[in-house]
Amino acid sequence: MFTGIIEEIGIVKNISTTNESMRLNIASKIINQDLHIGDSIAINGTCVTVTSFDSHSFCIDVMPETFNTTSLKNCKIGTKINLERALLVGGRIGGHFVTGHIDGTAYISQISPKDNAIYYTITFNDTTLLKYCIYHGSIAIDGTSLTIFGVTDNTVTISTIPHTIKHSIIGNKKIGDIVNIECDMLAKFVNNSLQKNETHLTKDHSNINQKFLQQNGFI
Image (cartoon, rainbow, N blue to C red):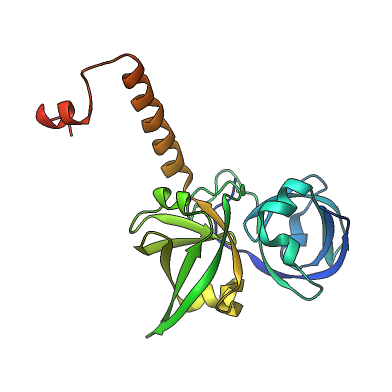
């Protein structure tokens, strides 16, 4: 479990790939101060496992499922990436609950500076994910916890402050760049629960439906 508050920007030092998998060696400083083999770590929001490390870098393996569904396959030597260690129980949660399980990818379609902020419009490749996105709701983009300030049929808009731009990789992004998307876990649970409830009511031919609840003051 993560919070979406990026601890450090790492740099890809070395890459070895096969057809649908890869191993990354990543240079870091802060992360390595408290790292163990087997630790979970979020790389651009993707939960992976530390397989080896030294005082200046660590290695992770990217399996085919992760390779095919995230932006990690686009990494090159020198690529900057967001890093966050797993949530420490007892610490402050500055962002929102982030699992590190990527829902899909999207691309940056517009960048608009406004005073001390920069607005990013993110266009989704899978528009079914938009049902989990609401105005002022949370979303993790490349592992960074951000607030949604606009939603359309195929986009969300987020705003970044100078601190976020400085301490995560979003400030280096350009129009057309691919980003990893993880929608709010709570929104996914609520949506799934409502869908199951509606299916159950339909099968039971119950008279209790949304219209009934509205008429009787429940919603």
